[in-house]
Length: 344
Ligand code: ATP
Ligand code: MG
Ligand code: FE
Image (cartoon, rainbow, N blue to C red; front, side, top):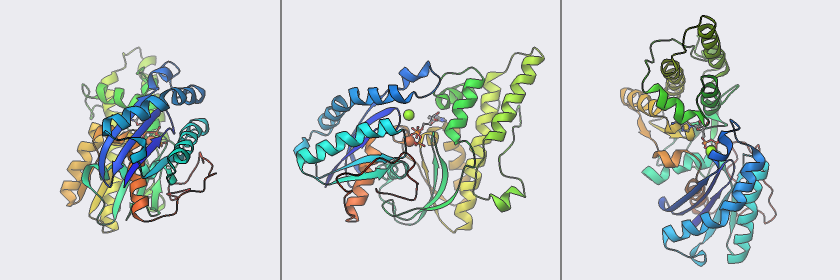
């Protein structure tokens, strides 16, 4: 079956077309530039941008795949989590389309969609995996056997998400929004070992109570103090070194705990997912550590890490494959939909 996926949870309007785990189209329009001058996503601006981009993005996806709306067998749309007004635009469009073409509609979980995106790269999961889901709003370690079934939540951040940490640190050292790609770029000219920033929740004590959890607020404070001290001493802040050392701390903790979870749960495969999975250092360190531990690493290409419609279509395809019931025609968005709930 041909699945149409619609994504509008944050600042990307995404429409994708997928058959099984084969991607036929992935059209994305981003309003990120409109938010940059505010230093973060402005919900009202995002909603308006989705409204404007929805129809052209849909047509772009259909053209890219060389299909018509009448060829679509089912529609999947992000029902949550995300910005309420932004979600509403995608869900309203999806409901209208589902009625127009008389096809089943599935309101699906955006976060599980991030994990499902990987299947477009390396095919359907064949055994349970540990998924390291690292995005702008979430940082979670999941055990996933089938993306259409509820994941087991092993742990998650107790404060900031990894992507949020990148965005906040970028602002602190004078880099533009969104911080992730800019920190990565700055870090390329820096020395990650020039400063040793803390590794959140890795002390012996924390490893008993928060074994698979993450914390980035201590790291953020440490970077802020370091920068303040340099400024007070009248020393120019070595932006590249700070960016590299910060990025190293995040990549180290994320990959260390994800590998540990694989080993302790006797799981042979790790999946990277979410916007921060696009980070070159996270990818390299995950590759290195998985190879050392004999773990197979699965990671999507960069364009499938950040928000897009194909990932939602991929999850829709998995849900259809499992013969799950479509969502009720009047289903509501849920801005805080838990990661363990695949469908609304
Ligand atoms: P969520 O999925 O939790 O609802 P979101 O959809 O806003 O949040 P994503 O689109 O998955 O998040 O990812 C965006 C985040 O990824 C931003 O915080 C951004 O800074 C970060 N990011 C993107 N590219 C990189 C990169 N190369 N290095 C580090 N972080 C990155
Ligand atoms: Mg985004
Ligand atoms: Fe996302």
